[in-house]
Image (tube, rainbow, N blue to C red):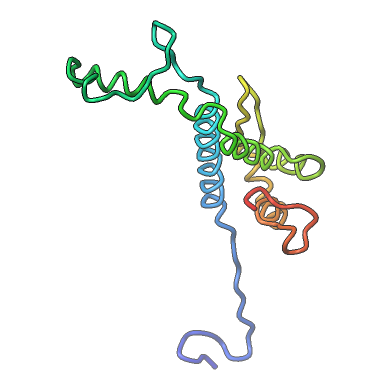
Length: 167
């Protein structure tokens, strides 16, 4: 007997699910781009040395007397030079960079797993960045969705031996 055309009484109803891998891949690609932008800016901020003027002195903030004989563009150029290196050797930024780097370069099985799902690191000019092998990630999402999830979200707080990348 058919009940309002929705299902046949006594027959099993089945559902199927499919992981939206495109959305997951896009989110991880965006995370990779964001990570690289953040570490690049942080590293640059604490690594750039302050500029010196031609007489060897530091750029000091301009006073109104200093600005009197200068054009708007000269003032902007001076202020830009004065800002360069203002955070040179800042310990908080250095610690932040180290923490971010440690998150993407874990040792042991965590590091091996990240590489197996396509998250690679590279080191150049003192900067560690990450890249994504999209085909390796898609394959991992098809074959080990829970493992990929754990690589990003597991935490010691929830009983895991190590923290995941996003933790």
